[in-house]
Image (tube, rainbow, N blue to C red; front, side):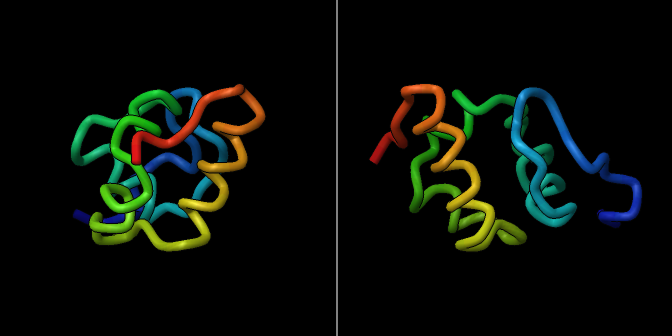
Length: 70
């Protein structure tokens, strides 16, 4: 799947890189709550999601008073 056609931002997720968005879309993750349920390890296991994307998602979770699942 080419990241060229992936939107720059999806659902209520904060802006992430297109590879991360593509990986999240591929498994149906479109919300911060969905991402939080995967946890850090689950997110990092996805091809295209790296430490920077996880850090951005963690900051957004903290801002909303939500925590990662693990």
